[in-house]
Length: 177
Image (cartoon, rainbow, N blue to C red; front, side):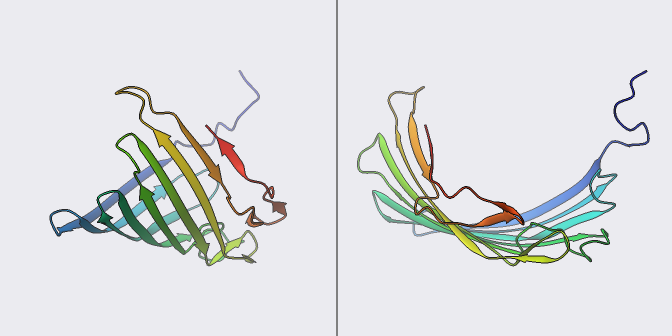
């Protein structure tokens, strides 16, 4: 018999549902959708109870045959009965926004600029975390039906921000390929 682990732990369970609607306008050049979600977790190993619910709105428009722009807004009401945080789940933004521009200079090449913000967050012990915006840039090239190499730079402007109190995010750009 192993001395590792906890025999009293039960498997985590989740019941979830979501519903949404999508509108297409201007011959599918403008797309809008709205979705609501609800989840009920049981036996989480971190929290005694966790109930994330909210809604998300996404809008996208093809403003030019080579350019699409879009954005999202998410409202998250993440409740928990963890006494250290009151009734809200820590490190989860109540409001999240994103916006992007996707440019296709040719059929095979795509350049995407993306910005995401995280607002109204706190860490364990109700310590407020500053809002931040993270900008990324990516370039893809469709070589053939099976190969599409890309390069992406995250934190394009080398901004300093916190996701967890006491652990600074490295102030550097992240380059991946």
